[in-house]
Image (cartoon, rainbow over the protein chains, first blue to last red):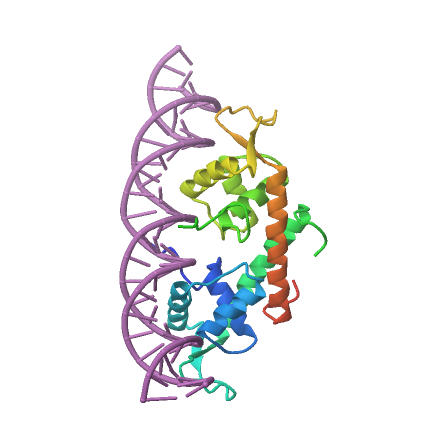
Length: 116
Length: 116
DNA sequence: TTGACAAATATCCATCATGGATATATTCGT
DNA sequence: ACGAATATATCCATGATGGATATTTGTCAA
């Protein structure tokens, strides 16, 4: 009965978190987001088109990201660019802080191959 | 056709990762694992009984954890204790290292409320 | 000791997130 | 202008999750 995922509070779904992260630096368009996520994760994370465009719609609806005009350099008008909103940045910060606490715990337990 | 989750390679499902983490320090029994995860995450992460016992079975099957004799202090023979295996510890280290890289990226983008 | 309650494990089911296939439109290169 | 490629969008089968429920077993007090 209660919704399973709020999209507004941690823990964030991995797709939502990595989309926010990929937009933290600068606006990107749909496939550019997917490419950046795959690049940054060294191929470990792949975002299918279903998850990608569904997540983008939900995140716009939730006010985490919004449509922005295309950067002048890009001429292809098919691309829809998205930028992170202050709300999205706030949520990204909260989830990142949570991850940092998890990692701190893991480090304290010696759950790392080396000091990273 | 290809299995969606391998359970042997990152990215790990959150349930599997946190179970491994909760067992890194010492063996625990089923509900003790769930309690520890909820405690360590300050109530953010909850593990339902479905996910808990299903994950435990899969992880034993995959050789990530194994049944261990109960610590002497505990008298209740209903409890089944699990300990992490070397394979589980190795996987935990790999996934933790991946998280560390994600966090490093997030920090570089200023996606943290403060230095944590 | 016995009866009531609580704890622990286990299974079932509805819901929802995911990835890939597919569809559609539009642009680019030649 | 035409074919190929790009980008977005939707659909569907699969799988992961949480909670309800079931079952067993132990604890505790009277």
